[in-house]
Amino acid sequence: MMNSRRVFTAFVLILTIIDASLAFDYSEAVDKSLLFFEAQRSGKLPGTQRVKWRDDSGLYDGYQQKVNLVGGYYDAGDHVKFGLPMAYSVTMLSWGAIEYGRSMMDLNQMGHVLNAIKWGTDYFIKAHSQPNVLWGQVGDGDSDHYCWERAEDMTTPRTAYKLDTEHPGSDLAGETAAAMAAAAIAFRPYNSSYSDLLLVHAKQLFWFADRFRGLFTDSIPSAKEFYTSSGYSDELLWAATWLYRATKDESYLRYVVDNAASMGGTGWAVKEFSWDNKYAGVQILLSKVLIDGDGSAYTTTLKQYQAKADCFACACQQKNAGYNAPLTPGGLLYLHEWNNMQYAASAAFLLAVYSDYLSAAKSVLKCPDANVQPQELLMFAKSQADYILGKNPKSMSYMVGYGQNYPIHVHHRGASIASISVLHSVVGCVQGFDAWYRRPEANPNVVHGGLVGGPDKNDNFEDDRSSYEQTEPTLSGTAPLVGLFSKLHSINSHYAAGPTPTKGQPNSYSHPKVAAKPYEKPGSPVEFFHTITDSWTVGRIAYYRHKVIIKNKSEKPITDLKLEIGNLSGALWGLSPTQNKNIYELPEWIKVIKPGSECSFVYVQGGPQAKVSVQSYH
Image 1 (cartoon, helix red, strand yellow):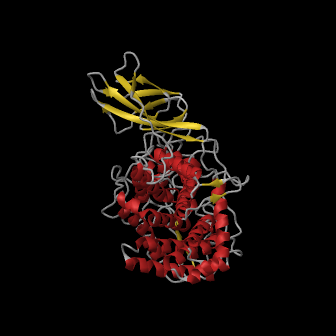
Image 2 (cartoon, rainbow, N blue to C red):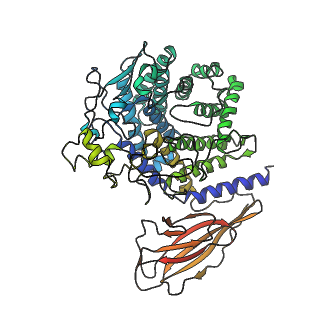
């Protein structure tokens, strides 16, 4: 018989996730994330382009080398096409589509997701011009960074750099193979011939990466200052793992088993998952092979991989016997000073996926300090997503264009200069610095969906265009968010109405319908009706779900209503925080409360209810 306390704990965790998922509009976050990939496009833009401040650019990339390298993505706020982070981003987009495709279809976003993937893979097909040749970069970071100009006005050299048998790059070729294999899985239900083509390239690239080994930065030194690779063993394991998942060819599984120790797959216990370090991704993907029972002949080694996957997850949960991933005081994973937010985003996606794998197996995560339910992993992933979207000490959305308070001085050339459709004259290399980079005003274009570098280790953030460590968005930052937000949306859409107890099992929580209790501030045009709609107990603490209805009792419409909420110790949904402590305003979609009309918000906390009062209104 199942342990009732275990059932209760898991149910409370699910309920907490469900309540918390109502805090943000994850469907909007998915849409914004995909817009960022359109903003980063290089090449001839399609008629379906939604980001209208962009235009065609880089139309002669590869011309000097007599190869067509038009297309692909600009890496960040500059105009270099770096192969390694671009390939990683396509892998993450594809993985998101594989795991959470149903949610993406519910959101009517699958077409945009596949288009974003294909914009990258079409470029990789061009870049993989021969079986043992991969063009790994277009543009030079140093010369590019000397200029501040729109992509449409580029005057910097568009030098192309390649890998071949004499100039290997196993990390870059391996990641590109992984991207092609993952994309092949994502496209299989929709375009099988394209999927087959991607697999041909993936297999050739893996053979090239494995047969001719070396670091790509030794062959393309100009990339070293910007994307220094720590090694290539993880990318070889990563590529082989994705090829096994795409083909079910046991030779690829045997590769990751035979090389498990020598390449560090079962040796490295990591706290980071990123464009540079794929070990945690390999370990969690191979955990699924073990969980699904597909690798019975290799069970011993696969268990060793899963042990390292557990170590990563436990480190993020702060339950790994002291070897934990660092967190800011506000709860954000903090691994690097430069553009840290991308690492938090990748880890959050990976933990959401692992939570699903463990849940499907009805398994728990066994950490040195405590056992962790799969739902707790998902809660942590959600906490990172919510921090990104505004639940942080600065009440700042670090996704550009999401919410009401987000960075407006983003370190991004195209966003910071008036669109070519508005300012038709060329903005020169140095002119861009003088006229646009140093101006104190907000960027004229919003680069929707760009995940900026984010706050420092103390949750401090400076919205300054020159602070590229904090305000520059990257492909590798936004890519994992597409899948993560799709997952969180699926929780919201499936359970927003509240969970239903399983038949034959007792209800593990109570939800008394307390009579509505109106209260109001003397002379106020609104009254509040406070209702406790749910309650449950965790340990010795009783938690309550409070619903507050705001009703306009006056004969005039109310706008710009601001509320003061005191004694709030839990999470709140349905209101937007302002820059002033304890002061909240109605969400942007509620412009006015008409006479006799009402709206509502919800909060969850233990102990007494919060104190709600009117601060100001018009």
